Image 1 (spheres, rainbow, N blue to C red):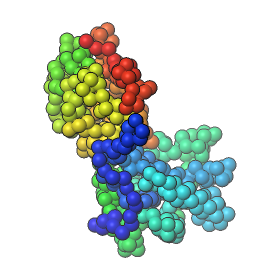
Image 2 (image 1 turned 180 degrees about the horizontal axis):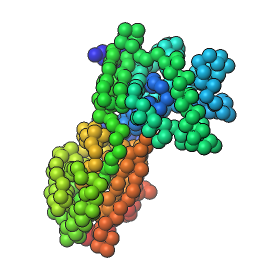
Image 3 (image 1 turned 60 degrees about the horizontal axis):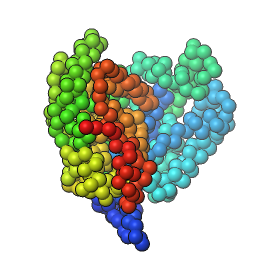
Image 4 (image 1 turned 120 degrees about the horizontal axis):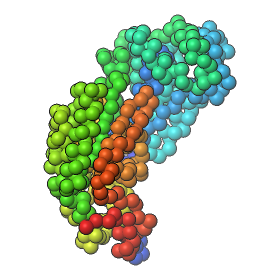
Length: 474
């Protein structure tokens, strides 16, 4: 496997924070607390016939890469084509239709131009070209265009020979796309099948002999088998690792925080407190809820952290339970077990710095949200592999997991609201994830632990400005 080697891009100095004095004020600037994953701008180029899950894979890859800190954007050539022509009947995709071929070629070139412009901007690292790219000539054109500008190309081909699965893909996704929004379902299905046959006439799959010098991975039936060739660099390895864990089977992921704990009612962060009476009632309500779901989810599994409040919450549930160290709450280091008032009194600078950049800030001898995302990556991989599962965790952990499934930015992630005593049901869909919030124990009082970002985050702010958004507690 080759390294990212000979192309060099300037990167910021790593560390918890860097600060400089200007007059009487201190200005703090945070840098990433994790090393960069991409040193060479990269384009992932999708390959495959329609209804083979290319857009599903492209969107899922982009969501994953953004979550682990690789700035990624999907460029769908179909959207460029829809802007170029008002309609696309089946004959538009005929490989002998020279006029249509020229239009489609220009649409691809326009997408490539936008990709190169996007990758040239600071902070942007990886693009995904979502298109069929079914011929060797088209792939060579894409490869030459990108590599001439110093962009590394990685082809991801999706193959599915299961006609029933293709039919399900067509009915579930393709008939709802903009090409068929004004057509009845029977006509749409007929036209799409005609389109498929035309694509099949000219499809040239990636080949280990012909394409031996190109980096690519071929997925069969979205993960039942893989062929990888000429893998270069850490990013391509991470992509393959992720794709090996993805499946398209229907399932539900349930996410909940532990029941109310003694630390919650005292307004303290971290710690290993036990459940309060309200927290115990929630654990019982949670067990009852999943007992009622048992018929539909006979193989439900439960994951907790190794802290007692999550273990106590899951204990009454009649399902296999597995504690994960990776699901432990964000480590607050020197601030563990303190209230926000105590942190402001003892470490006012630290609280201000955290409010300035909550995602990258790392507690003294503790963790940042960025560290937590890295710690949770194995959990995400296992969640992608699993069927129905319940995760009983903590506020910061739940925020990171939600941000992955909902494609939230680093600015949004640390402020996602995840209340106590509610279940979040996540249902992965073809191009995203549906979320349903299910409150339990509505008649049982529970504290609010959600602290929004204060309006004032200056180092020299007043005490009342620092504490104005702290939830009430004992």
